[in-house]
Structure formats: C-alpha cells, structure tokens
Length: 361
View 1 (spheres, one colour):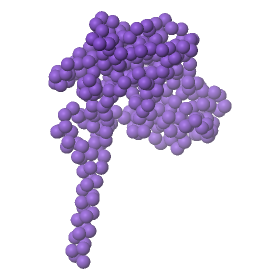
View 2 (view 1 turned 180 degrees about the vertical axis):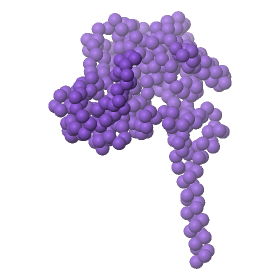
View 3 (view 1 turned 45 degrees about the horizontal axis):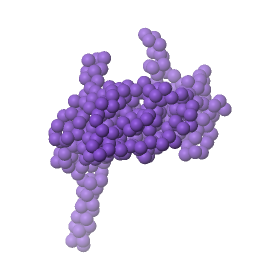
View 4 (view 1 turned 90 degrees about the vertical axis):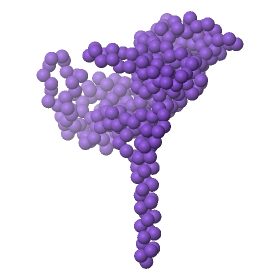
C-alpha cells in the first residue's frame, strides 16, 4: 500500500510539474517574428492589373508565456517578454483586446483606401457602418448582456449610427433607469432592457479648463464608429479581406497595393517590398510597435525593400524609435534588404518611382 501510494503521489506530482512548466500561463506575452504576407490576394478591385513583384505586410507573433517559454526566450533569438497589462487597456479582457485589434484593422483599411482615392483624385464618399462595442466595463449591468464585438442598432427604438447618438440615447436619464438596447451579434439582432450605471467623468467630453464632472450615466461600454469608403465608380471600388490579421500597422502597405491596382503601371518593378506603418486618410505614416520582429519576418520571406516609419519626436521631446530600431535589427541580421524610412505614403511612392526595374521583370 505504501509503495502504491508513493507511485500515485509521484505520478500526480509529475503531472502537476508538467502543467506548471509547460501549460500554466504567466502574466506575460512572448513577442517574436511573425510572417510576411502577400497583400495581393487580400485586395479586391474590378480593375485589372499585373504585378511582377509583390507588396507584403508583416506581423508579430504574440503567445502566452509559460515557465518553459519564459526560460527559452533567453535562449531563442529575437524573442521579447512583455507584461500583459502593458497591452490590455482599462482592465479589458484578452478577448476584448483581440476585438479591438480587429476593429483598428478595419479602420486602417478604410484609411488606406481613402488616402489612395485622395492621391489619385478618385471621387468617393464615406458610409457610416454603425457603432461597435470594443469593451464592456466590469461591475455594470451591461456586462451581463453586451459583449465586445456587438453592434448597437437602436436605443429605445432610435436608430444608432454614431457615438453621439448613443450618448443622446441616455442623456437626461439617471443611474438605475433602464433603456431598451437592440444589438447585433453574429448577424442576429436581439433587444434587451439594460439598467444604466454611474460612470467616472469622461475627460475628453469636458471643455478645456472646465471643472471635471463628478460622474456621468451610461451603459459602461467603450465604443468605436465603423465606416467604409465607397468609390463613385464601381470599377474603382476597393475591398479588403485580411483574414484574422489584426492591428493598424498594415495601413501603409495596403495603400501601396491599392495604389498599384488603381494607377497605371506596376510600381513594384519586380521587387519584393515589405513594410509596416499606420496610415491616416491624408497619407501620413504613423509609428508602430514590434518593428524589430517585423524586420526578421521580412528578411525570412526574402524581401528586398522594407518601408519603416521614421522615428517620431513627440511634443514632450521624447523620441519614439521605429526606423532606428529597424535599421539596428537589419544590421544585426546582416541582411541585404534595404530599410527605407518614410513619413508619408508619397515618400514611399517617390522611392519606388526612382527605382530601376529589376532585371528580368
């Protein structure tokens, strides 16, 4: 009996140890090089085009850290540990973080399309596609009903398309009063009565130098407005399907692919061009995170050119590095890939315009 007990104890101890080392998540993420994805299949335009080279967006792989992964990150090259709380905002869950990344990707695609339409003087208009929930605060009645990813359709039978209309739907009401909320989830519209909650004051809604309000009343959700860009000509309408890739950092590369599909000629000139960077509707390129990992992904995919956002100097005087980090990692790799800093889409287009065509293209 004693021997059997020792065997059972040893087995359970071994199982527990395996779980702790290999499966129990730590409050850390491991960041490492992801992939370099060909954008051409993601962008859809009726207008025919031909590309001898390719544009590639680059990704960072993010994984939960275990004890084993934590230890291996000190051995494996190009892996970085970061606390989860550095990425999760306002106590959001990992599911809400993922949804936020999906939403900003959709917004990034719309901004890239708009930037190209402006550059090519293509007539277009903006279509409002509704208000989506990115996060539901804990400890509010709405937390038991609404989820990140839901689209608010109506409040008390009033159609909703903007965040201002959501605020208007609860104006004049008190905490504890209920409103009828219609929301769409996975294509199905449901309607529920939800009690309003007392929330901390929203500093962004207060006039400058005004005394902050003690509290406000609302559902307790973080919202974002979705919009799409519609070309007046159906032949020039662009749609993007990027699968499960999230985040805003593919904006620049989407804009270059879209430009190549709508403008005459082939601006790739036979080269494999990778890169990263947010973009706004005016074509300005914004800094992003994880560029040192994206350089590795691009090099592994055989990219010959990599577009990086320039280093950004904040009004506080702090410099947010992008190009300098990208160039440092490229030098460490000993890659032949050329890293090109750009502040606007036009700078990237000018660089490509001056390139000689690749032999054989």
